[in-house]
Image (cartoon, rainbow, N blue to C red; front, side, top):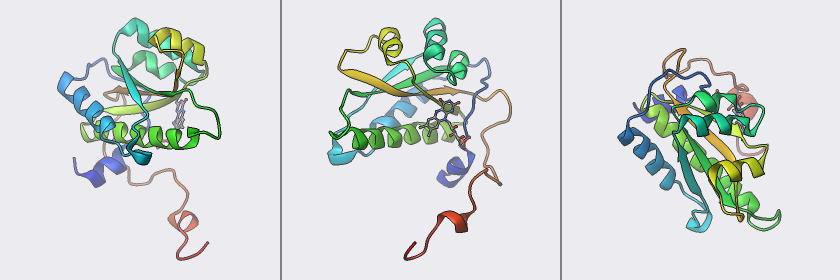
Length: 171
Ligand SMILES: Cc1cc2nc3c(=O)[nH]c(=O)nc-3n(C[C@H](O)[C@H](O)[C@H](O)COP(=O)(O)O)c2cc1C
């Protein structure tokens, strides 16, 4: 898919077809995550890929809006060092946000849907994913082929109008 098409086609997909993701496609999505830019090239992330159905079901309990994770073909848990506010926490979250988008665009490029899930219960995440005590998981990205409509460019996105969000030269 062209980059511009992938950008316009990406949307949150929360209903997945019963179809697995080929290893080379999952590898490419993770390679996109690895290539993400980060502040000072610190690469503060780790990515835990989950495909085991029972573990995906457990992860779905991590947050009240994470139920789609249970049905995903794979879910990537983005992991960061436990960091106090005022340290590098804002920058690390920014870096992980960029990694999220890399994952989602690489998936869209392959016709694979993706869906964020925030993490409400860090202790549960740590237990399910066997994370060290000095790591936390701010977000999951569920992946799977959509069960509704294919990943194709959206002509009328539900976004604020361009003139409302773009300011030329000054506010
Ligand atoms: C930081 C962040 C956290 C999100 N958490 C959730 C979530 O827990 N569950 C969910 O279903 N969607 C979640 N979303 C998805 C947003 O609701 C979605 O991106 C937004 O409504 C725009 O829709 P679109 O992605 O289909 O364009 C999250 C998105 C972001 C950026």
